[in-house]
Length: 112
Length: 114
Image 1: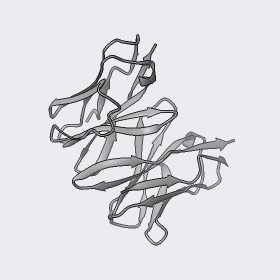
Image 2: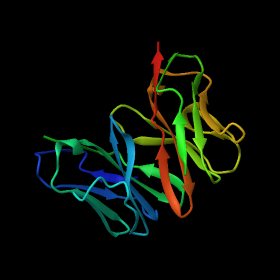
Image 3: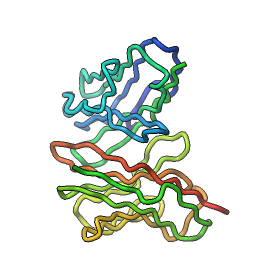
Image 4: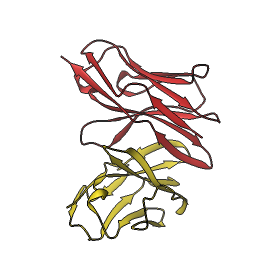
């Protein structure tokens, strides 16, 4: 099992550009989570899905952020337009019920 | 609502001495509790988890944690620290079930001195 796969590992973009982060969860897992990690705020849950359906998006900072899960093997987190304060490491995680959460290696986003 | 409090933001130990990272939780339900480790510029790795089975949980790399309901604690310990244990450690609570999401503590940075 390759684990949770995130791409890209690093992303540098200019303010105002659209950024798309990608995640492939572990096969068979029914939950998928997007987290953001910053020095100031630590780890924050942005949104999570159950069986491809968004359950709780209360952590999404604002309308510039959107997440989709078109099928069980793929999810995206999009920021449009991006701002410097969006710079962070974004983690995707998946789990089967509440057993065995597995995190991806993260995408380090820098918005200049 | 669930929450976790990590009592120490930084802990420094000497190599070969015991490690104690403290965590207290608050939960209205029987919680699931986890410890995750994050090495510099790396992702999060699960060390161990408690899901209402044995109260003493053994994890990877010689770490263990004991669930104490009376003290609402889930402290992480290791008998002898190794240089490679230097990392940030997160205590995490989850209600599980229909609201299956993790609530992270603020983290404890463990330094291991030679």
